[in-house]
Amino acid sequence: MEFLTEFGLFLAKTVTFVVAVLIVVTAVVSAAQRKHESEDADGDLHLKRLNEGYKRLRENIHQKMLGESDRKAWLKARKKEKKADAKARKKAKSVEKEEETSPRVFVLDFNGDIKASDTDSLRKSITAVLSVAEPGRDEVVVRLESGGGLVHAYGLAAAQLDRIRSKGVTLTACVDKVAASGGYMMACVADRIIASPFAVLGSIGVVAQLPNFHRLLKKNDVDFEVLTAGEHKRTLTVFGENTDKGREKFLEDLEDTHVLFKEYVTERRPSVDIQQVANGDIWFGRRALDVHLIDELKTSDEYLIEACDRAEVVTVNFRHKRTLPEKLGLAASSAIEHGIWKVLGALRNRNIQ
Image 1 (spheres, helix red, strand yellow):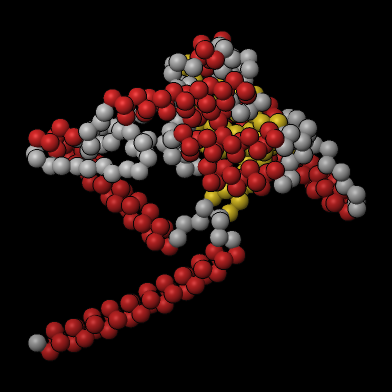
Image 2 (cartoon, rainbow, N blue to C red):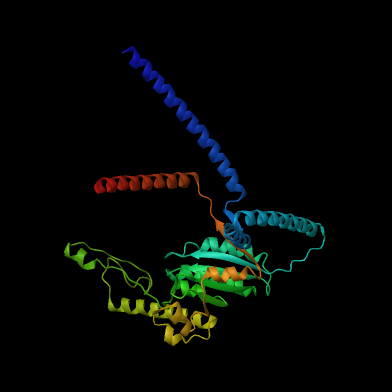
């Protein structure tokens, strides 16, 4: 009994100590986070020079293909070249008037969901790029992947890309997989659209769908009332009884949205026969080239590698900071997922045996 009492006291002290440490750590982390967020509440801007990455990749594969003696000689020569380059850069920086002669290519990424949630990051990245980009010399490349979504959300995303063209900076859209519906609305803003051979493009149309439970409610003697002020405040509802007049107005709104979509594409790509392509169909890359939905067949990798030979290529990404609860939630979900896969793997091995 005495042992149990002492063990209980020891356990209580240990738990108290651990809780106190956790409280202190949480307070410190929260204070540091609040200070950091006050300095930059929006997030972090991340830049990566692709020229250097491709150069390292080329050097790595080159030296791995050499023999032992040749590799040593090559590494020795490269070391001398790096020293000479560093010395030349240092000398150039010492000159008071230094002119930039090399054009720059800024690479942005947009991965779209139904709500175009990436628009905020895109907006901030564009603002940062336009603060330094020079019209007529620099270029912006957007690597675009989206199957479309809400009209107003993708309308805003496309308007953000319009800011680049309005400043006179060349805009190129690269589509490796899909730019359909709202995704194509964004792509057509570009001066030039480049797509891979089997990328999905087009779907210039508008769709809306919703279930209606009115008959189910009526069958169970449940009344549902919709009160509006304004004839067209509510056309179709999920629970109320829909009328032919409401459907007619709803279709009228869809048609008007479709007209706006077609006008938007026509203004930015006058070479497109809008009557031919604005029927909701999709085209793979090769077929999209035939109907002028795109300008060239090429992957984004190929285009950017070629750009590295003529310009300084920099990726620009604006990343939001995660709060402490978000980080803990991600860590917990990752641990749970890892545990599930571990259990499934053990069960599979057991079944195999």
